[in-house]
Structures are given as structure tokens and as C-alpha cells.
Image 1 (cartoon, one colour):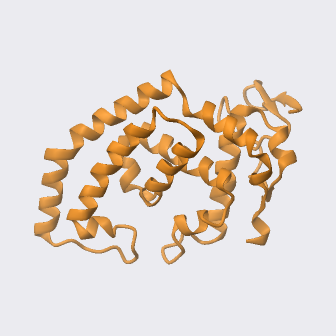
Image 2: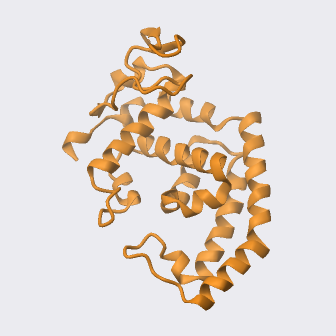
Length: 219
């Protein structure tokens, strides 16, 4: 059962062990060094995605993923418990698509985990979101199959396309992909209002509390 207190910034209800206020976004404390079943049980439902995502980000940072010569995000995420990965992939999906559509999701560092995000939607049972994300990913995979430098954009050093390839790529994107990706993003926003995936996420986490346990100091 969550012990609650007022957020020091906005005064709305947060749990005592929350690291960030869901309502105003103020960071209350740094992410924890470890995730335990007791910590999960102490949090309000709305706090679960943020805390688990911030913990995953802490692990990625400590493992060097944010350095140019560091490991890939997906390789470190594979070492984390699946519920923690789910929080990270779905927060990335939400943040990127809501800020800049599916194109932003594919071209920022989140583009490394698009297939994992789809797998995690399936895992939690967000069935109405799945065909939307599948359709967007299919467009992205088609571009990757046609343009090697785009497919390898997360390699370091990043490959430089020829002028001819770059021109063909952007002609293809602007002529054949952008409008469809925009339509899919609009469907994604609408679906989130009608049947939020976070309801499925919270149920999944509560049903798999014992699988969340992890200590970042032992990676």
C-alpha cells in the first residue's frame, strides 16, 4: 500500500518513495539504485512508468550507452528485467511520437528499440495500439531495406550516404512516407485517449512484481 504525501512543488498526492511527481513532473529524488517488490508495492499506479523508465535510463547511462563508443541501448536493455524494459520502450514510444510523430521515434536514439516496443505492446495486451505501430514500423523497415546508410544510422562512426543516395532517400520519405506516418501518429494519439496502453501496463506490472527486481550496482 502506498504511503502518500503532498508533492513539494504542486501539492498534489505522490507516494513517499516516488522519485518524480506524476502531476507536475518535478524530480523529487534521483532514481533508486535498485528496484524491489517492496518499492513497486509502495508506488501509486500513475508513478510506475516514470520510476521504472528513469531507473532504466540510469542503467543505460551507467553502462555507457550515452557515450559515442558505448554499447547499444538494446544490448543493455536485454540485461534488465522485462518489466523494466517495457517501461523504457513504451515511455520512449510515447514521448517521441507525441513530440514529433513516428519519424522522430525512428530517427532519434529510440529508433534502436522500435521492434522491442512493438513486442512490449503485445506483451501487455495493448491490442488496439499494435496494428498502428506495426504499420509505422513496416514503413521504417522498408526504408531500411532500401537505404543502407539509413539502416546503419546507429553505427559509430555513422555512415555517410552518397549525394545520390541521400537525395533518393529524402524524395522517397517526402513523397511516399511522411503523410502516411502522420496519419498513423494521429491514430496513435486518438487511441491513447480512447484506450490508454498505460492501463494495460499497470496491470502487467502489478501481476509481475517479483520479476521487476534488479540492482544497478550489480550489473
